[in-house]
View 1 (cartoon, rainbow, N blue to C red):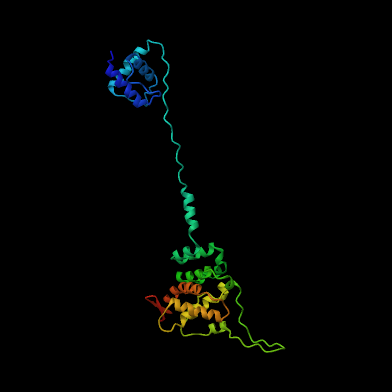
View 2 (cartoon, rainbow, N blue to C red):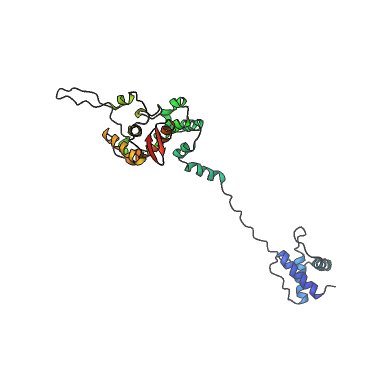
Length: 275
């Protein structure tokens, strides 16, 4: 025979393990509680519900008695609510976003090998005019300086075609004053100058970089990049361009690694001087 304490303990454990709904009233009178426990026993899943030896003994005894009685109404077992699976983050999409955020300038700056820079030049239409000359570069620093110069943004006015050097022209009304041909002046041999890889007007469609290179070649004493950029800006204005000291400063920073490598300038504590 099952005593009252065993029955109530068994009812409590059944409720805790099975999560019955409505819940078993462990304080109910024995006849009522016995019927509730019998109904709960009918809902036991032997593959899931595991009980203590004391409760299992109560279950076995009541199960044997229940077989002799009519089937009791079924007590429904409350099914635990299932949580919707959280969507997994799309790792490929995150990687694509990170790749999109890397600018072309950052890719060039990060490249250390000549082969990496060549691959970037072939993959981007900005360097279409440069592709035929890629085989002529032997050092990564040379090609990097040229590629950075190509993608540096210019003012709208500076993007317009720079007037070609004028030659002496005679008209019926008057004679035109001779204009100094800066390109011919650049072709004259000099004792010290930038290497042949420095971009020209034909490469990038502007003469600001040429004036920056000249300013770096004619440093008097030891000067900061700001002073040299101001000098290059004035030279460019004199040649017919527009003022943009900030742009001149950026170009000088692009040319500086190659100029140092070729021994054209020396950089000491942020001040440049001719070697």
